[in-house]
Length: 51
Image 1 (cartoon, helix red, strand yellow):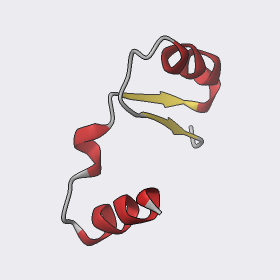
Image 2 (cartoon, one colour):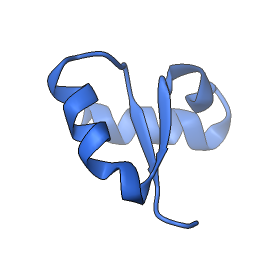
Image 3 (spheres, helix red, strand yellow):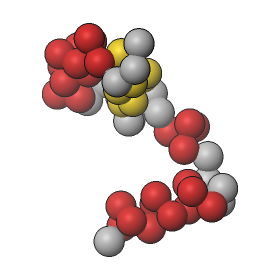
Image 4 (tube, helix red, strand yellow):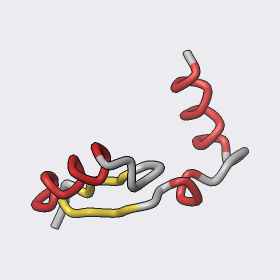
């Protein structure tokens, strides 16, 4: 339920989602993204599936 509310707030522009993304990685760096998450070195990690 909270995730849905957060997505709605981002979609409506009430909050800026980019502000909370700590890392932006390409899909080829998926393992690095997992490691960052496991080490809790990022708030949110965005994985871009497109080159």
